[in-house]
Length: 321
Image 1: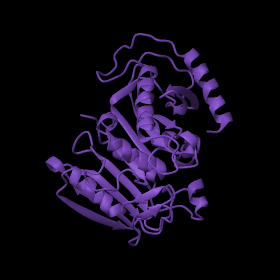
Image 2: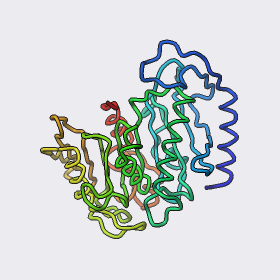
Image 3: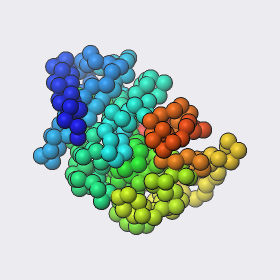
Image 4: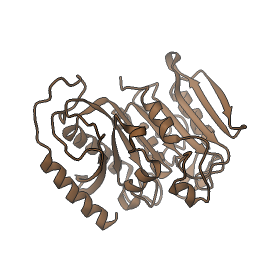
C-alpha cells in the first residue's frame, strides 16, 4: 500500500467522521441501516478512510452521490481493483463514480494488501482475512451511511474480479450481496468444479461476467495464470449455470460477430440471472467505448461495449431476498 495514499485516507476519514453527526432517520425504507440520518457534507467527491480488520490497518474510499440525502437509503457497489493497483486506479479507469453510471449509488473502492486480493499465489493475505475485511467494511458502511441493505453489489477486474467470485462463493459473506459482476476475472479459488470450494448463499445468485477473447493475462481458455491455475471461462460459466439450476441459454452476436452476449434461464424461470459478455478481439482491460488506462496498458483502444453501464443496469435488476 502506498504510504501517501494511506495517510490521505486516514486524514480524509477523520474529516468525514468529524462532519458526520448522528441523528434520527425519518421516513427511510425498512431495510435501511443505522447510518441513515448522519450528515455528510463531502458529496460528489471521493473521500478516503481507514479501518482495522484482523489486526491490520486497511483502507478504502467512498464516493457519495452529489444529491446524497441522509434520509434516503442507497444501493452500495464495491469495486475491487486488479493486482499491483489500488482502488483509486480502478475508480479512474472504470469512471464508475461519474453520475451517468452511479447517480443513485454509493461507490466504494477497497484497497488490497500489497496491491492484491487473496486467492493468487502472490497474495499477501489469506482468503479468510480478506473476506473478513469485506464483512468489517460492510459493517462500517452500514453504520456511517444510509445503505439499502438489500442492494449491495460487487464488481472488479482481474485479480479483483476473481476475488468478487470468491465472495460470491462464500455463503456467509456472499449472502450479504444482491449480485456480482466480475470482469476479466482470475478465478484462482474456483477452479475445481461445481462444488470445489464454492458454496453460494442461495440459488439463483445473479452473476454477470465480461471477458476478452484475446486476453493474454487471464486466458479465456484457462490454464496457468500469473497467480495459479485458472479455469476456462466457458467451463467456469458452466459451473455457475449448474449452481443456479439453469436450464437453457441463448446467444446474441453483434458488431459483426465480435461481441457475444449469452444469457441463461435459471431456477424458477429466472431469465438473465446468469450472463456473459465475450469480446473476441479484446485483451486484458476494462471494456469501454472510451479510452482508458487499462486499454492503453495492453496497447488497445476503445471496445464495442461500455462495461460500467452494463454492470450498473444488471445490478439495478436485483435485490437480496
